[in-house]
Amino acid sequence: MEIRPAGDGDVAEIARIATANGDGDGANPRYVAHLRGNGGFLVAVTGGEVAGYCATRRFAGATMLCDLFVDPARHGGGVGRRLLEAAFPGSGARFTFASQDPRAMPLYLRHGMRPRWPLLYLSGPPGRSAEPSARRVDVVDAGAAESLLTGVDRTADYAYWAVTPGTTGVLVYDDGGAVAAAGVAGPDNLIHLTTAGSHDPAAALRSALTVFDAPTVRLCLPGPHPAVEDLLRAHWRIDTYDHHMSSVADIIASDRVLSPSLA
Image (cartoon, rainbow, N blue to C red):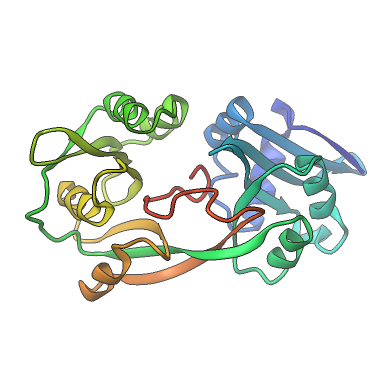
């Protein structure tokens, strides 16, 4: 079995394997190109055919495993193990959001990652809020605002998100007019939201939700996020969840709206 970086000629096979596993991201050539250009993207090849793939990126000082999928016809053949060995050659900090597939957690445990908390896929009514104001802005402006809030440049991620029709940036302001949170939203989904450390993330989220006209909004929140209980009381529901697994506790903050594939 050969493990090598994905090339242009592998994109169709990556999409085939992604579709077979129900993964919409891997079936999107723009997503694959984004991670190839801003992270690492490996394929496992056996018998001249792509048998599986995995994608990683550096995030929060650690290596994030964004994707790991194997051709269903080759499940149980050690493809996933070989890909992870190549993706994590050393002992550095690492994390992922593992699916509920019963094969995923044992594999990640063997590669030094432990379960920490659930990443909840939530949906519900956006509601109205008397919290600090929020508005939709250009995606570039929201990305620049997040860089100022966190010191982390996520320009490439914001540019990737911006290509999807209907996607805009979101800024939340405090009573003094300063930016309290920055993120990105589609017509009916809050893709990502980061709150400045001095502000209440639950209040910022309630405010960000007011930018939506859709009757139902979708987002992903860490289980410990302070807004979870309030959302459930407001008739939101948990549609499904992943397991956040990491080699070190608290690698990523649990007070943000997260993108499962890009965090």
